[in-house]
Image (tube, rainbow, N blue to C red; front, side):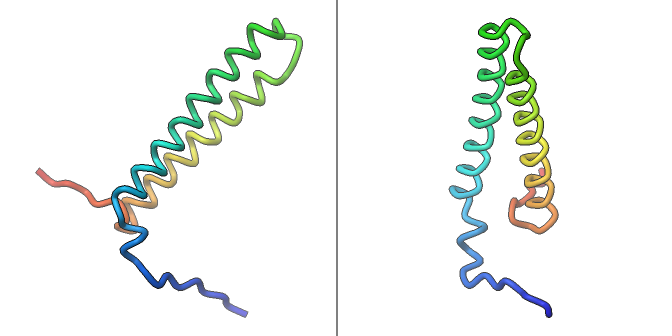
Length: 83
């Protein structure tokens, strides 16, 4: 059984404001995770693994953002600017 998802309004996905918002939210989450890891490092003095978890989340978010950007360029959702 093959299930396909059809998007009715393609302009909603290619709207630059939505794409910029997603990228900015991802970047804010990455920076927030970085600072939470810094806070856990000073608070627990290396006795807890919360810092490692926070940095793991940061790495996962960074990789997800990179993959989303690459997929956006590949599928034409994010336009390329040629000079």
